[in-house]
Length: 256
Image (tube, rainbow, N blue to C red; front, side):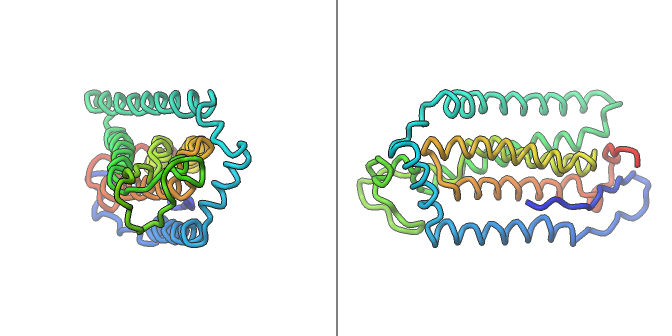
């Protein structure tokens, strides 16, 4: 997702008319990522990029998902990673609640509410889509040692074949949800927005790669999870933190 050089503009209650909505900012934040997602989806789905990568990972592991139960991928990056991101979310939620009762922290209330809610909504949305998307994991497929046939994206599922619950990537959402930190920093500490974006992308990438190595997901599953998390973060920013829509206390910005 491309970063922007559009700094946040604080707006006080008596600052006069709100600034105009920066449409160029939203075009950069929306159109470019969606075009990249569409292009990647064509490569991965239409031209077999998902299978090409999974074939090589499966062969590299000895034609078995030998890393499925490895301590690094299973215990550290999956189990411990899930607990760590849950603890991080609880810490942010606690900071938001603290800001609601301490007047000196009032400028942080809205930004912390944004970060708390968008990360939660993104992970819940991914989980909800997984519940009905009916897409298999690599480890379920005959091609990779499982028991189910390969089915195209819109192919009808034969009778007797269990439902798939692997798209989009749920565990990766626990990392990619934190791309919202980019917009949080954009509104509060603009110089840190790229670091916030890198943190969210890095965490999601670590979780996503680990799950691909375990045979739990194809690459496209992770890319769609990232897209969902990004869109939730962008929508949340537009609704709550965009200076053009705010008439309350300004966000905290660092001195120039």
